[in-house]
Length: 112
Length: 159
Image (cartoon, rainbow over all chains, first blue to last red; front, side):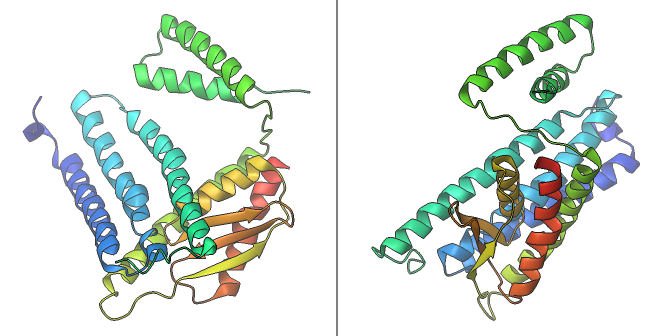
């Protein structure tokens, strides 16, 4: 079955979700570019990891379920794994930056 | 000590979702997989969480979902406004009452998964959480959110 056979009731919300997810990730990436301090930049990619990824995954569930003719819910697992892993790396980066700034060796924010 | 096979149940559910099948052999394989992994994990981490009160947990999940959506929009607005001004970043010290390690871990994940706030440290001696906030305008509001909206239900669930 090809994508052209998707009913508009599925295709339109899925397209809207994909655009929204893409925009959210793009704005998050823009934050990495625009913020001038490490402690500000660390907040930006969380957007793409949470709502951005969520929109794409819901869109994927909608279209896969419609194409397969049955509920496809693999994406729930991706959501769970994202929620388990991405905060851990963020906290690790944060702790490292806090440690470096406390030890006074350099200021992590001074480099653009 | 009464223990519900929570981890085993989640692993079995994961197996069935990955295989997209409710056939008998997948139940058997999945159960064997879940029991084996759970036994191995127990050797790694003997301390077992005892979450209670599913209703509180569901309400907390809903609140977190709403907050994630809301703060995504808020952080997006801040990023698009950076041409005019950089956000006022800052650290915030929040004294906690919760001691349960699983509750604290959940709090860390909730805070860090919400855009605009990152868990920046925790002092186990005096139980004070260091929070990093992207746009620190109203310290009292953040304190209120963490304490009332997240910590209280987590204490009900884990303690």
